[in-house]
Image 1 (spheres, rainbow, N blue to C red):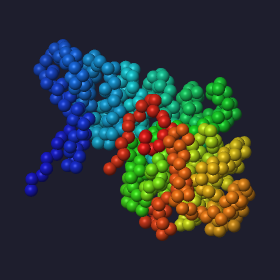
Image 2 (cartoon, rainbow, N blue to C red):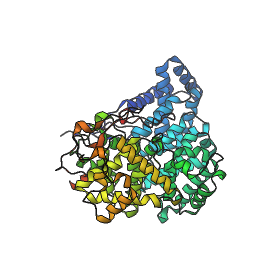
Image 3 (cartoon, helix red, strand yellow):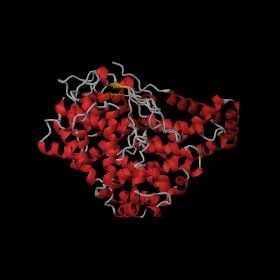
Image 4 (cartoon, rainbow, N blue to C red):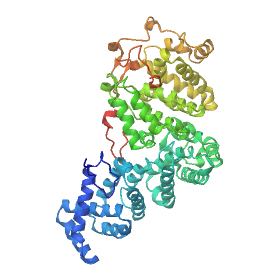
Length: 544
């Protein structure tokens, strides 16, 4: 039997399944062929003149020459320096086409790129930074998304290290791009946690010096990160340099920035989705978006099993669960249409992630990640969609996973005095504000049946009653209200200026009492390359 032919590619690893070129691959190959036809057999001066004449003809020739030179840079290291020089001389758009193409390659094609092409893209990145090309900061952001959390494989560590060296060597350039700077502080502060093994001592020290240096020198740029900056600092606070920084944040805030009043200022600022999104690779994001927008409840186990095997199977991947929970809470904001459908809801995925934690530290951090927006919740600044998943995990787990509900309620009670004792009153206010908002928006009509449920042990019920006395007795107008309500009563359209909606209580037609809540008992959405001005925190997922 004749074997089907597999088309070869200059830049990508191909197979029988993925042999067909898409638009970007086709354009790069056509550009390469056009370039070869223009300069083949010519002297350097003649070739330069031919390229200038070609790009002057029309937009199509300009694009072909530009992409042809880019293809040479990425596939032929021996000709990269000359081709980059030619590219900077003939460009007529300030290399914007190159930047768009590189961001597209980083977001959509990185995993399929050949090793040579990856290495050359990283080399080109440094050259573009060195020349001060506009837009290269967005390429950096998109490439850094592939520096995955919870992954200490040699390839991932090499990318983390290379990008870190690039930023250290180009510190002055980085400081001119505050959006990228704050993102890199967030990324590397998070990655430090993964690099505690002895073989990563040098990398960890380099990461620590980089992050602490930027936080001390450019704290005003980093304040925009908000409350998740505090969460990440707490995770690595025992590192001496970070411990000293932490003391200054708590005791000497003005030494870091004249406008910084203290840790409460950070904790009251909701973290932008840009930071939370940046800690998932584009491929991971595509899978999570697909799971939360296309997979029906009850048919999700095989998708979760695949995700578990692909990303969550190693001991180091425990920390990735926290990244995923923060992403789902802060970025995945379903539309009313999705919430009223039989698509798997956010709370079910988060419940699966919580029950799959095998480390006590990871389990505690996962609970904190789930409740983090509750602690300093303010109805004027925060979003109901950030606090909805936690209450629904507790609500739906009571029947089939009462231990999950019990551990979350226990955590919620104990976090008030223990998160940061000087701010315990603020934490209590934030959690109370969250619970009141949950009832106002009718996410749940009453908390009484959850907080005083017979399946909770007596000691926990006493602690919950003492901590949340206001919510532990049925309101006169709510007496007789059952935990399970009809779908018609439970759909409540929100949309406070941003078009966000939710099905109250999450109980639409997702499951019957006989169906499991978490899967441990039993095509892809498109992602755009990041642009510096894209940060619509509260738009529905369907519009992301």
